[in-house]
Image (cartoon, rainbow, N blue to C red; front, side):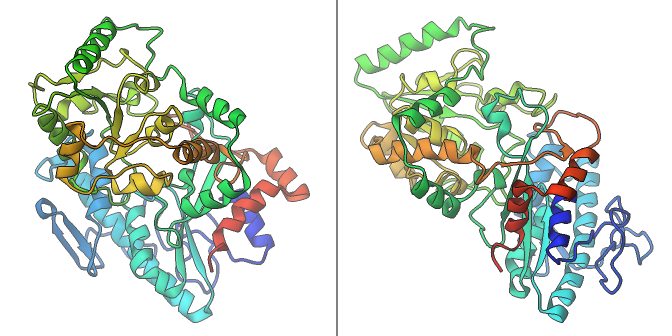
Length: 471
């Protein structure tokens, strides 16, 4: 925020930190510096475990509510990381302590947010809150609060993140060189800033028609050895190809279902169009395909073994499935195939959510998405079933979708859109990690900041524009 704050202040906006010690306090603004730097207390109150707001908590029934707003989903996202991808349990002492800390920090943030209401109503000016990690508690609590309460007072949450650099570099980019920024209160369909959202994509699409050259460029980003099949070839590969041939010989269809890293859904409220969660959806597909003559290939996400993303001890995709998968299901070894190679081998891809949504249509393979965010994240026209019966018909081979020219063009454009300056704003000034790998403390590049002060930077101006784009 330091470079962006320079531009916002030059434009006449007041900029302050809710957290004490980050910036000088602004006189007359009660929310300025209100929170202790560790997030566990308010500066004008003694440190206590007592909560200032009334919370209703019933974890087993998915309730973590305050003032009538249920924040369960954003707590689940945070607690899943604590549980390392397993089911969070508050009867576990370590997890209970982490949960209690999240509630206390969220409670303090809501106290600060209420003072912003006083500020907004008194000045009758728009107020914007800058935050990262807006799908996790405690910041996810403020995101939801802005949706329900803040928006009524012109208080919006501005989400900042690195863009999707590590996708285009296959995790070779350790330092972030871009920033993505979106007003997620004004654009609630934006799960994460690096996805841009449907409105920004429509504008981009109207100005950037797809050509054969852009299709070729997109394919170079897709056909990457993310599963490290070249360094670690798998003996399973030929067996899977044989099974595909046998399935087709008996008139069956072939499907691939792609897994998720179980601590990395990164959604403020993740659920399916038909199924309550990812695990329920995946188990249904496995059970249902065994009633048909089709073959289901289950591919784990390559990142579930990448230390830059998950570290050690995280539950794996295979852990959420039954020990016996049945005769019509094959679970792939990590290095058996890259995802893109399956596009030529299967009739349809099934995904909860993810970049496959755009990759496979470019390669001519239809995609079915289940998460409610899959349609919002990738607004290109993929199929999203609305019932178990639709899934059953699909797995039986009765209702296979197809990829038309328009879908392929939109999918191609979306991959370029995520990399464009419309979404990935070039941004130096600060040493920041592009993955979850620990690179030490963030560091300001003072020489670059001095150049910004003297000469300006259109990219930082573009970043600052996002704060009051919707007033």
